[in-house]
Image 1 (cartoon, rainbow, N blue to C red):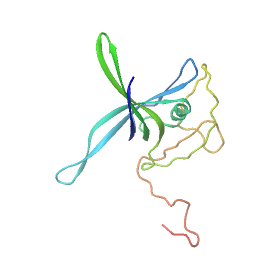
Image 2 (spheres, helix red, strand yellow):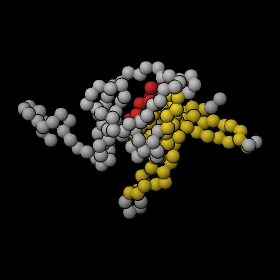
Image 3 (cartoon, rainbow, N blue to C red):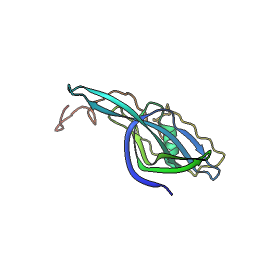
Length: 169
């Protein structure tokens, strides 16, 4: 039995999500997220600290959506439970930790996305799911698509230019 602790992290994907389908038809995506701490020096300048790497697991529809939507380098926010496990390997006691994700999404401080709702038929054991970071967002599809168009901060009016009694930017 492991200990589970609520956790929320924001970082970048170190590699593309790895999606597998179990024999019982449950989708499982494995992710690795790097989180860098910002450290302020005595002179007031900021620098990146040492990255902390987190193993993340997502299941079912979340796993499929992650595999179809995100790719290496994407900024993400993950919320879930931190799970600690102890096991024996080669007669030696070891411990591991991973985050069991409840939600995963792109970090919108660094880009924009287009949300597309999807329906999720129950996966078949022989089904193949492939990530397509260039999925079309113009037509309706059962494959969700997040398109991060830039990694630098973007400031845009929320609904176009002001046209009357609205505030202008």
